[in-house]
Each structure stands twice: as structure tokens, then as C-alpha cells.
Image (cartoon, rainbow, N blue to C red; front, side, top):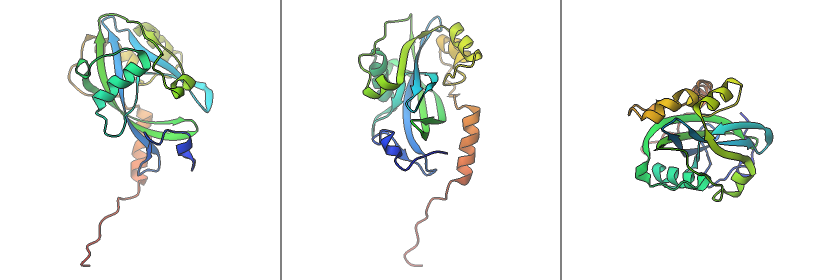
Amino acid sequence: MLVPEDWDQHLDSSEWSLGDDGLPFRTAARVLVVTRDADILLLVGHDAANPDHTWVFTPGGGLRPGEDPRAGAVRELAEESGIDVAPVDLEGPVAHREAIFRFASVTCRQDELFFLLRLPTRCPVGKEGWTDLERDVVDSISWWSPHDLRVAQERGREIYPVRLPVLARELAAGWSGEPIDFTDPVDAEVLAELSVHRPPAPTSKDPND
């Protein structure tokens, strides 16, 4: 695992903090924006340290200190897409994902909560609310059909969550109420290994001993 000593120069330290496992960690909220036809709103981005490494992902991002996840999801959606909705318009959280990834030369761990926003049809999206970092590392935001999403994954395109192409139509029909585990199998193995090697939490000593 690569975590340089100056990791906080690569990541926003107001969102990220070192976890017990030594990896920068944050909690994020994301929105699955899906139409009746199962078209889904997605972004394409690249690694700041490796522009050739690209992937497709859902709108969302890190929560601010003390921020409610549903409020954070609405805020991130408005910033990244220009779609402005109320927190009550979101369903869920419908899914959870624990992720390990490298970004800007730093190995990170992120807990993600996913909310669902179902729309009748595609709507216009904009980039006016993007942050400076998003303008640097996000290449596009657009609607993807379930067919295009599935074909892209079959051709080797990295899409997160990995199970999204096979669940797009199911989500368009409505959430069953059963929480979805979006954690990638590879990440689950790494997380299990990290938990085994995580140092035990310190215990308080009885002052009378």
C-alpha cells in the first residue's frame, strides 16, 4: 500500500484523515440517477498522477464534517451535474460500498453510501458547479444507456460500482428495499487482509492497578 508521508498534500485533508490501518479514509455519498428507460448519469475521470488511467463513476463525493449523508448527496449532485433536488427526493440509502483505490499516488479507503434518484427522462446537465479539482480530473458527465454501459464494461472499461451495468434496469424499476452491497470482490479481499493486520485498539489502564 502506497501512502507517502505528504499524503495530505495530494488529498484534501478537510475530507480525508488517516484511519487505523494507516490509509487516508473518508465517507462519501453518491447518487444513482436513473430514468424510466434505465439510462444512468455518469462521469468519466482520470487519475491526477496517471492521466491514462480512466474510469466511469456516479455523481457524489466526500461528506463535510458533520454533514448528513442525504444532504451531502444532494449537494454533490447539484455541484457536479446542475440537477437540483430536495433530500426527500432521494430513495435510500439503497447501497453501500467499501472501496480501496489509488488516486494522486496515494492509496485510499472510502466508505460510500448510495442514494437513488429516479427521473422520467434524461434532463440537461451542466458543469458550472465543478470545483477546481473536478475540472482537472473529470473529463465528462453524460447519460449512458444500459446497452452502452454493458458494452463498455465488456470491452474492459473500468466502471464503478462494478455491478452497476447489470443492476441499471432493476434500479429503474424501483428499489426493493433490500440494501445492495456494491463492494467489489477484490476490494473485499484487501479489506479483509487489512483488518487482520490492523493494530489492536489501545485499552485504558485502571489507575488502581
